[in-house]
Image 1 (cartoon, rainbow, N blue to C red):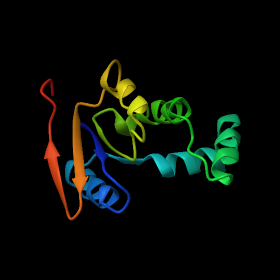
Image 2: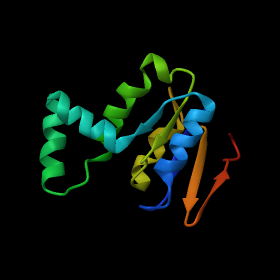
Image 3: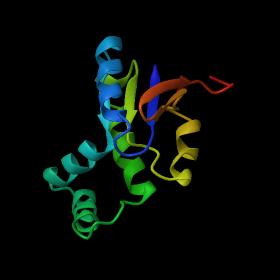
Image 4: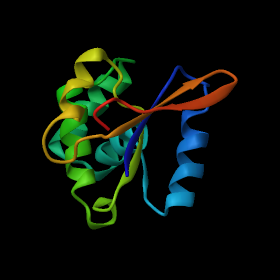
Length: 122
């Protein structure tokens, strides 16, 4: 299963992602953690992300999608993953719906509960 969890800050996305990932035995991928790992690794992309993060900015969707694409190609994500924190903008949603690694299901978290909603083509 490939699932992304959407919702406002504090809605419980991370909490639900961890629980679902444990239950399905697939990795939970946090965009924030992936961005910080890229910065920590000292890559060129990480240096760009660091500059944006230090000014309080939001990394562009293309940059975030490049980082995520590398991560979902890892062996542990081949049978599925839970993606927490993407898309952050409407433009970030479109690349998730087509091609390799397409997201098939979405969970929308609303305070105070999390409700599953599946697309028609899922």
